[in-house]
Amino acid sequence: MNIWKQQLLFLLIALVSVAFFCLYPALPRILNNPEQYLQLNGAKIVISVLINYALISFIYLLFRKTFITIFFSQFIFLLLIFINTQKEKYLSASLVPSDFLLIKETFVVAPGLLKFSVLSGVAVCIALIVFLYRREQLEKKRLFFSNALLSLLGLGLFVSANFSNNFGQLCKQNQLGWLCEYRQAFPNTKGDWIGDHLTIQKIGFIPFFFSKSMDSLNTRLFNTENIPEPTIKALYTPFSTSPPVLKQAQQQQPNIVMIMSEAHWDARQLGKSIPQNITPTLDRYQTSSLLSPSFGGGTANVEFEVLTSLNIYLNHNELMYVSKLKRPTYSLATYLNSLGYDTTAMHNSGKFFYNRNTVYQNLGFNRFTSLENMTSAQDRAKYINQAGWASDDLLYQSIRNQLKHTEQAQFIYAITVENHFNYNDDRYGKDHFQIDQPGLSASSKRQLNTYLTGLQRADQHVEQLLQDLKQLERPTIVIFFGDHLPNLGQVYDDYHFFASAQEKAEKKDVKFFSTPLAVWSNYPIDRKLFTQSNIPAHFLAPKVLTAAQLPLPPYYQFIQEVNSCYSAIHQTGVELNPECKHPHPQLLNQYKDLNMDVLNGKNHSYQLLTQKAS
Image (cartoon, rainbow, N blue to C red; front, side, top):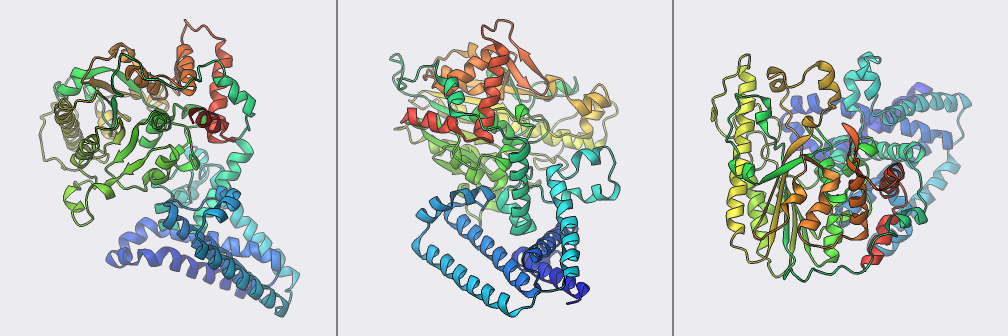
């Protein structure tokens, strides 16, 4: 076969594959507004076609026969897509490369009809492959070398993109020119906040799986060190492993409600022109500030630190919910489950964002109440604001509903969303605040009005919730904090919030990561636990457990010991406590070992801690 005819055929097959599995499901949206769809997704579709094409050319190197290559490649692609569809159907999770390490376990738990269908299909296809392979003649060596060159060049480009975070550093240095204009079109499954399920809908399963495989390979080659089990066991050996017992002075385990409020921040830090009494309730109960690992976004990384006490800074600021957490992981929910708590994660947004639909299962929550559970599909539109985010009324009502189950202590981790970026709208109405600041543009005034009104609404929501919780008989603690500073863009520049362009780029001051932390309870607790100037998100959980008068398991005793020597382990600096009584470099290395074991290693921690808990 002529090389040009062959490559055109491979490209056509790749195009049909992407059109059928990526474009066809999106057909209603495409027909509704084709120009907008192509403007938003055109480059991604082209990249998806090229990845499919490069993989087909690469598979040709195994057979040196054109039609058997097409048949085999499409069989493999279809098989992977089918398995992914079934996994999403039964487990609400997408297929990832690490799943192939669990083939035996998967085969045991899979329904009998599904196993029969897959095995029968594989057997038939193997027979056809053998039949076609014998009938088709081996092709000339020049076709082999041509495909080798084309596939390796194409796949090399995409592998390089994955290994270098889509050429992020080179593009910052303006070294790649035109390619940087399209870097967002390359699959980025390690850092795509929309999550696996929605990424697959956008780019198709094969580019997703290819990118995920490269992410796994990158991590395995360059970012993984298998920490031996005795090393992890030694972290917990000095601490009490006796079964947790509720303190006698406490009659009931308290409800624990943690509310992580979207972009909640003390905006008065911008300047004196900001109204001073926007959040009176939260000001009354504020004890300190939370030191967030993120600025302007990355909500899931904040909750990752709070729930696991692991550390984003030590893990290269990866988006953990997307790149990691594909297996059971010890967390605050895991421990509270062992104490008999009913644990619920809540978020008034879609369940697939940040892979929350699977992450919360792996973190041990009994349930995840998402927007899909809070209101019916036909009623949902009336709760969505101009910016496309759901009202927090839904979330706070879900908290109230869950706390009605007073026969069992509740742990609720709730994430709000209505005050999410972008603020260039009037979702709460216009001009609630008159802001007199020299040089403030009309656009910035509008953004500030929207953002500040959102802060005011957050305070009102909390005030109403606290009034309702005062009626509860069970002891209840509410921990409220912002996840990160808002993404206000030009507003920061108009207020000269950053002293220089260098400070804006580096963000080395804790003020860029400090959000209000408020604590309320309907019974006496030791509020001094929360009175230091900044509490890092990764050190918050032991303080909450101590305030609730719950015993600390070995995991959180170790985290507390790390905190006794390090006030913060953060991109703004690793802050050593001068009163540290331990050999602090060794303690920090142990904390690094814990992070490596849980996120990249064999996760000995989970096995050790859950065995003790049982």
